[in-house]
Every structure is written in C-alpha cells, then in structure tokens.
Image (tube, rainbow, N blue to C red; front, top):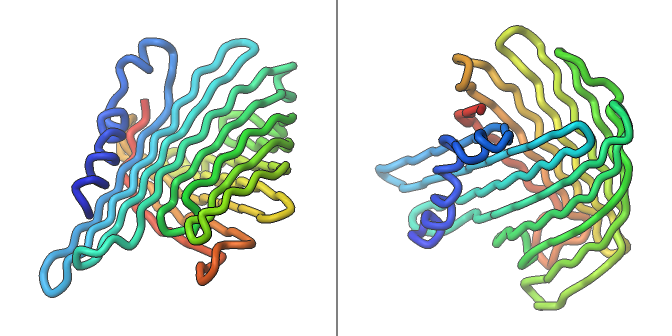
Length: 237
C-alpha cells in the first residue's frame, strides 16, 4: 500500500472513530474499518473504510457516505477506490418523499478515471418500524464518465433506482441490504452491498459483508463484475 494511498485514506479514519461536531449538530451514523496485513513469504495488505452520516428534521433528511478501498501485494497496487454520495430528501408525509442525489466514484482499476452522476426522483418507505425498514426510489438524471484507456469522456441521461432493506433478526443481529442501479444508453452500473452486523456492545459491532459491482460496458480487457468480501469493525454514533 503506497504512502500516497495511505495518506488519502487516513483522512477518513478520524471521522470513523468519532465525529463530535456531527453529533453536536444532530447528525448520526456509523463508521466502518477493516484491515488485513500479511508478512512473510509474500507481503500483502488491504484496507477498507466507510462512513455513513444522516441528519433529519420534520420535512427534510440529508445523508452522505464516504468509502475507500486499497489493496497491494508484494509492493504492487491491486485495488484503489474512493467513493462519495450525497442525498437530500423532502418528505411529503411519513411514506412518500422527493429526493436529489449525487454520486462520485474514482476507481483506479475499473477502467474508468471517474464516474459521476446527479439525479432527482421520488421514493417511498414501504415499511418503517423497529424491526423492518424497506425503502425504494426511482429517478432520472445526468451521468458523466471518463474512460482511462481512450481518455474519452461520455455524458448521458441516466435512469436511477435504489432499494434499501434493514431487518433486525435478533437482539444483536441485523441484516442490511442496499442495491443501486444507474442505466444509460452506453452503460448500466449496478452496485449491491449485503452485510450482517452483530452487536458487541451499544456502540461497537462486527460486520461481515459481500459487495457486488457490475458495469455492462467496461473499457477493453476489463471484467464486468467485481466482488468484495469484508469483515469490518463498526462504530455507531
């Protein structure tokens, strides 16, 4: 893992440990971090970190997320990805809401220099109680991406969809699912994150997750599907 990569990821870590300013202003959420280091006949390291924060009032809800992934083997970088998303909701009632969403991703090994999108639409909470939360939203917007092989930039109208599911299985175990879809004439992007979180105490949990990422038209010689399996320490605040 390069010094440059570590310095960029380290910017996220203090926020994941605790964010007093966010808590004081009514924001809450969780931070996750997972590290794997192997030394000996071969040297390898992997670091993934996530931060999710949200703030809500009677009519409005704001939320953003940050994520970083870095991996190397025997001094050669094998993965490096940074992602950011922001969404603002306006609530018509307890179930129906309008949203505006932005998403940016820099994945050095996907074949794209970046993928960025902005969309607007409608969403609905189909279920929202202490044990089960199910929310879906659909929208339309604009997407821009740059191919790092040809260095060509594409801009397209895009259809977006998102499904979020949260299920409390036991007093200590929770299932979390999030599916994101962006589809345009040139490319369809699908991201699915599934995790199971087990509470260790009121603040700390252990999460095992499986992430799937799909691009229908990746640059030449790039695979359409990427998977990531993680075991992270989660801190909620």
